[in-house]
Image (cartoon, rainbow, N blue to C red; front, side, top):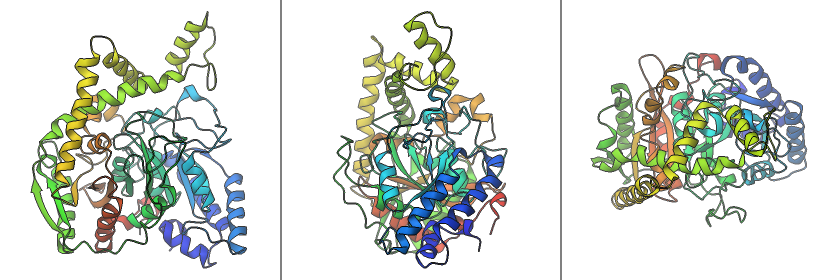
Length: 490
């Protein structure tokens, strides 16, 4: 088996055993990126020599007997909205230009301290606003399974890179499904942890009350290994929680006997493609066969989640993105008459159409006369949604739903119909509104050979339950082992 077909943990084991060196792994990854980048456009920045130097440093530490993590020496990618010291961080936007942060995000510091090797920064929807990874200033990302289709978004570069074997794991951000949906479209595993369990220090904010970072990898076990490294309290993020780091990987037993799993009937109705429904229900049968109790229940709040999400997310985005003005850093327009004109021209020319659409929506819902009617009401709906999930978890250990209503659409379809793109988030956005952990895992393919994902949802701080059930599912299935033809299918 070639290196790119290994899971992150399998490669880490070979590195610790001395069968593969970190430098060899990094070189293999860079060779793979050169092979695939022209096809899928997953990366914005590839580090090359810097990645090899970092791999060599990890190699020296391992030879000296340093006890690093199970992922030491395993090459990774980071979404391009995560700050990396001295390395271009563009958020896939013209307005940030060649901005290179003067510091590493907390998450990056933790991964590097554990022996992580950064290959580069991954393409995405501009400022993480989108579900297709087509709004990037650096061109759209293409799905490795079918280059005429989108990889999902906004962490589309991360999912595409892992699926194509360009890196063994990646870290993305998830504001309304931006880890889970591209993972589903690209046939890999992706997890959004509980809000506050991973520090947001160094993440360029989209919607601060909804943003969370998490891993995309081949397996639930790989995701657990990454979360073991990045979870934990950070004094630089006032919303981070006092949670213990480590133990998630060690806790994966594959035992789901007696676990109660709820299927929200409202997530399996109108608008869901029959092939997606069949695959997700088949995933429920796999867990049932391993001893879990699975039953349907009603979750009628689903009809409210998309409107509430887009009110809140757009409002927070309009505030967060006001800092990009062409004065302190990033790109600046030319030919302006005064400061106000500089702001206007820089933002008009620097932001893409989708970002401007959401800023305008957010400014509208926060404006006098509409604040109570829209934004305040959306916050009230958010509280109702959280309460509905809390009540569900009084009865169930986990919930199981689709990740998206369909498999990956073709390039251009969603940009022509933004409302359709927004509605495709219906199964993922409730978890951001409620702050809950959720994981997307491959559970089958449609008739055209495109991947389908199932979503496991846990209560707050229920990462161990979610990962445990996903691991159990992957012990009995092989969907997570499949690779697209461009990635040398097994």
